[in-house]
Length: 509
Image (tube, rainbow, N blue to C red; front, side):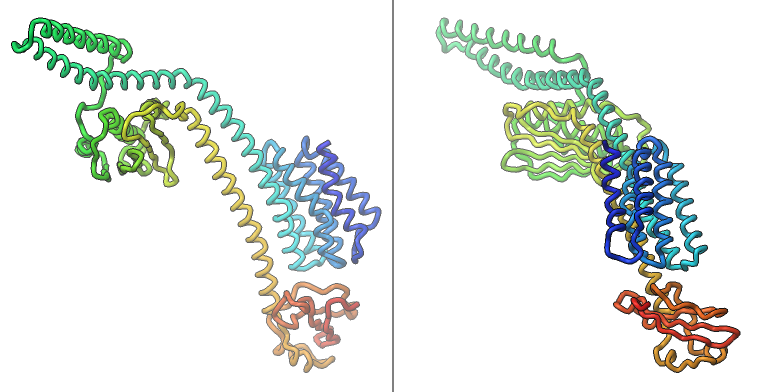
């Protein structure tokens, strides 16, 4: 079914070139032969893409070169649709690009040689090469990209899904560990307050100004608070793994940055005036900065780092950004559990977390934390980090392919236009000089009036060349794109004398 649909699309230009009211149109036999070739090519292109490309390329070149003298435009467009479509599909289905590249190179060389051998001149040769580049090489290249793109996307999604399945348990452990650390920090803060409360109640217990009943009640309250603190400590001890934290209690972000700087890290702190943060929020900000700086040391040693803390009406925005690594880290790719833990930590206090590659090759960690802890906004979203980065890489690759293809097309058109302009401008025979030429003049007397270059193209329907003579063509004016762009002066010489001078006007027969 897809071969039939492709054949139907490619057959339309052939039919138009057969029934249209123009010179050089295809005969019925040529149209049937062309449709048969296109049918064979569209049937083979998915199984034998290179063979299909050879068939349609040959059909296009035969049609174009056979109609160079009659109607070169029709010769280009008759099989242009088939050449573009088959080249694209062939590029997409070829298992390796080497054979197709060889065919395209050979077809370009063969077309140029055939154009010169058939006497088409330089303009026909350039038109053949440019058309092959635009109608075959570019679609083939895009087809190859689409094949690689599809394979890369499929492999990327499979890899991302496999990695996410394999890391699922580890991510859960990272989140559980972060929750346990947060519970420990809550114990440190609440336990401190409970200790103060027990101390104050203990003072009441020994106050001689209170009657025995009140002192007894204070003693019971002190015992209850002490027991609550012990139960809290026991619960946290069960939840939190037995490993030391790298955080230093009471250390500010400025002190953390200064300590990192003395360790050799090129880090700069840009912060709004500090506010009186909630203790949990202050520890969260400290944890974000500490983990981000640790990642820089591990994965981008020598890179400059900027820590920014901005205070907004909704909370604090913490950004830790580093430039691209100044030297290889010598470490493999890690699982990113530290970032997973940070994402869970920030989420648990009601904030938002993001981390990813920057355009300049560096890395940035961003955390939005509220002024006070609140309920988590939703589940953590870092499990799709690998997939989002793969999508970004695919989009960039696609844009590069489009730019390259557009550059090739523009380059071909620019070269053709430049050639036409130079060819016309350097071969202008002034009308007054042409009018002064006399039949029978010897060639040496005519030569000073002629330009150094001659035109390589010829208009349609030129008069026959005088027997035994050699003719030269010259531009009538330097602009090849106006309505008289195809008009030429023709001078024919035989035995060293001018035997014919003609002004060849477009459309005359």
